[in-house]
Length: 520
Image (cartoon, rainbow, N blue to C red; front, side):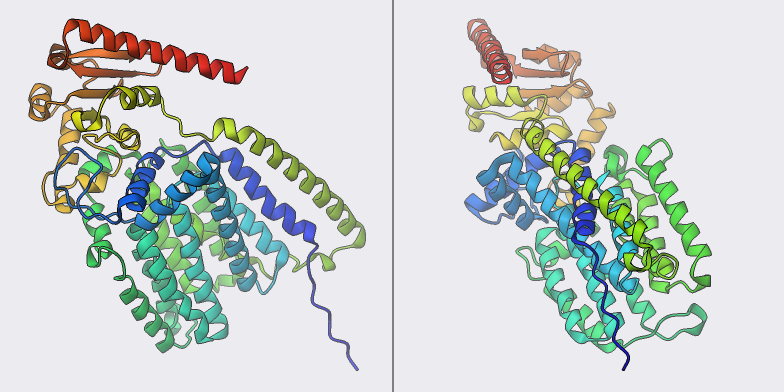
């Protein structure tokens, strides 16, 4: 009687190290909370306290129609911040990254026919690449989990043709439509290569599998996307929000591929290495769906730097299919002495990972804070002025900070809101672009809005403008941080003006003294 070979199970130390390392590296890569977190928290706070809104309540403009395409994720971010502070947001990002790692591992394990070594290696390489650029405190980290969930469900269906796995498509579609609606269409872009591969086309060497259950699941997934507070407007949000020429000229992450950008250089090398593997391994038998995912997401990356995040998500795991017969399936195939050395190294590395993690977590409270160079200005504004009496100009990247402290700015990083085709009222983003490139008169601009205050960064065209200095006086200036706070001349007498400046400088000195004492 032939004994059935016992299924190999890797040592627990292997999983500890391979899952701990990406977490530690994520902390090392983590450069603090993303600048967009200011307006995300402001959106979430308003929704939790007042409910869903369709007319924007955060900016100074009246009657702007809005689709809060990340309403659910913004609410989650705010609730976690409200309960646990900045460290809660850090842990949220780390938890999301853990599930990204887990799904990457599961997908690789499935495709490689349970090649543990290869699956863990590819998971590690993919997540480290992703974490170095895109694991940030934004709703996109939740979207990465959903999109990988779609891939995993589709791969399970292809392998087993069991319809139960396709139930996940509508569920994930519903979640994505409410958590991060602008990326909802990516579910169907990721699904399209599987649709093509489901047909029997000899010329293209497609795999061919049952199409009807897949098509039904896709149809249901499409329909449930309309179950959100904004209906069809959420679904069509991406078509009215991207492609605007001013956004692509003004926002760095929407710029096209260029070798001047270090991220683009990194992605070019990565894409070339993966293309080499596609071309020279598996004897030319490359699954069409993997080629489509590679080419489609790479094209997104060339169109805008932001698109490379999706390229990273789907370009690594197909290598599990190419290398599954090249690398050993598990450590049981290795010599005992080699296994002992590897086990010792794993224990050593796990200890190092644990120590590094503890060190970073002890250090994290001092580094993972809501920080902004103009934060002390807004704290002062919050104490001294009633937001209802303030009409405030702020630079594009600083508007979220203004909103977080309860004031209504001229503009903020929600670029899509300020397009006329979205808000149905004014093309404010075009106006700020023309202002910064001096295509419109500065004097006419400030007279049009008659701002009470200007929060201006040194990169802003208003920073040294003579037209501004004729009508406004500087309450506070910090040349080192590159910020000026202006106030309109006619709002105060000379005596009141001097009092405000003294109060502000006193508040700044007190804040610095408190910070120094806390450090000591």
